Image (tube, rainbow over all chains, first blue to last red; front, side, top):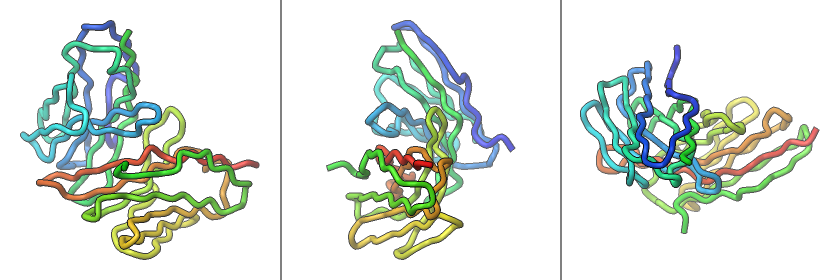
Length: 112
Length: 113
């Protein structure tokens, strides 16, 4: 049982480049989330998807787009990377309302 | 005021002692409360969930919730060096059809052998 799988684990981009972070869960969860974690800032929600076919903005959505491809997959795209997007990105999923989040292993992104 | 506040620490306790981690939250509509442990360079992992006032025990861990005081705590009994990590408090409320989960910035715990 893999849980929540994120790819890649590490990525270095130059300013202006684009990339997509992939996330897949095999727990049949309805809700999926993308967070970023920065020192001293804690985990901040970028985008979430309450169910297949729906997405909405979180606390820090600027510079990002998402796609809920199906119930299992939720991708995060950086169209034009900026140094301020250097961070660790976590994908998470939850079964239902009031249920805890289950996290992937994270993607460490550096933008130079 | 931050929505979820934790003392950043580090909190240092000797091996075998009780570690007490505290968290306050501002949203009175919060419904679910979680403690996550995060080792350096790793992802958060769930330790405890608590949904109603009072204590909930699981092994060496006890979560305490007081909704009137908007306070959540985590006690770790017989602390071990392997408990050294950052502990994240998370607070959840239903908000327009999705879970709004807000995290504190975490308390770093150091267990001294």
